[in-house]
Length: 307
Ligand code: OOG
Ligand code: NI
Image (cartoon, helix red, strand yellow):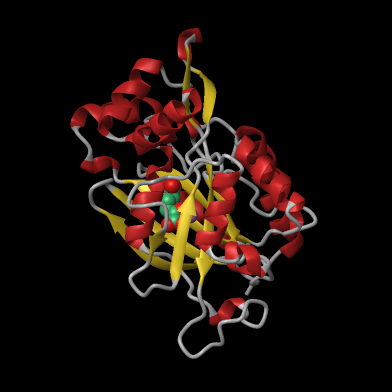
């Protein structure tokens, strides 16, 4: 078996974070306030629970293409999730070493959309005749790092974007944002005691003016009670569309996760390592977290800001 390029993986993850931080001012805002409260000394002290990406399920793209990047860096494919209402598939991937984030990759089940929406998507993706990941030198971390932010299809028109959003907000998000990092996730149980539950951390976030996704309630709890998640509402970006049009659309967001110790393990943070905590994801939680970029949430954020 090929040895994993751990240094290369670090570089790839670092390349992802730069543009993400610029697009999502909440990232710096939260980190800054965490430093001020003495939770951490700097960004590197934050344990990143997982990162997430979205793709279009069409030939040569989708999970089957995108996952090759992380399989090359030693990730292992784990459970499958199906989101019937949102017409999505997803998998999560376990890292080669526990200090790296898990990865969550979803894809739009394009064939499940109306013919109209399919035609719109294929207008952009239709001339991708080979898998773009196959054209990459996966062992070259800087080439891989650049790939995430490289356009794979033409800039959409605003009217195509809006039409897609009518049927699938996920579709519209991907047609514009492509492989931009969708979120990173602060591991809350690794923080000092005063902030180490999702409830305590949410209170802190709201105290600094971070607006939380309220879909299904601000705290999403897995059926076994051991995975608790919350997320910010995606921040709006000034997006340039084809023909010189511009619009404010949803960009990326930040997530927060608390993983409780599995039954039989002591509940004392610091004494419990990652292997002894609830792993993986939860469909019902994820279903609501996707909505962090949906207009019902982003409109609530806008109204709040105009307050
Ligand atoms: C991913 C939503 C699901 C989780 O942790 O369950 C998720 C997305 O918005 O693309 O992040
Ligand atoms: Ni997530």
